Amino acid sequence: MRFLSRWAFRLLILLLVVAIGLFLTKDALAKWWIVSEFREQGMDARIGQLDIGFPLNSTVAASDITIYNLPEYGGAPMLRIGDLFIDCDFSELMNVRRKLKPHFRQVRIGITEFNLVETSVGERNLISLPDAVAKPSAQLSLGESPLYFTIGNLNFSWERLKFTDLADAGKSRDVNINIEGYTVQDVDKLSDLRPLFDQIANKVTWKVLLNKLFGRLFSN
Image 1: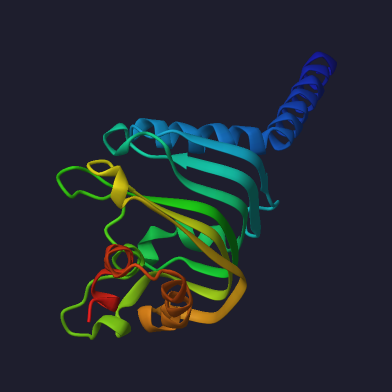
Image 2: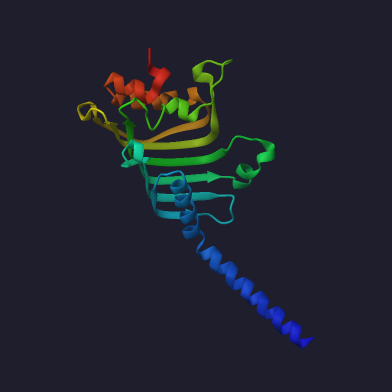
């Protein structure tokens, strides 16, 4: 009996050490998993810092994020994010049976640079910002289209936009967006983001690039 008790105690200590080890390395493991997911899609990614809150129903903070384009779009950096903070309920995200849209209590995102790339056959690495975030709906007007997610408080910053034309370098453009700490409350549908899109559109004076970036939203 004493023998079993002694081994049970040793097993408990081992499990405790493993649990502490996993907790201390959870950020590194999460970073490895995220980068692996991108690489499975043929892309590459780099994450400088990643901090996952504990317990897993609170926050994720990251910095110095770089996501690279697919090889057919040149393989150069597509998106650089200097600062990212997300506050959400992860249990809600994982509960697929309820079929709820992800709800983020707070999102702070600071984009350093986004590179919109167009190939020689006119394909782009992003269709348009509105189409990327909103669900298409034949019954609703474009502005009332629901988003794929909801956000209680959005704090948004964006430094630079690049447009790269792989067929004609002369058509490439660099635009300083310089939006700092723009805040939007209760984001649920595309029209909630329209004031933010207007802010970006004011910085993009080249109409062709404006249409590539926003599509139908600013086509008229």
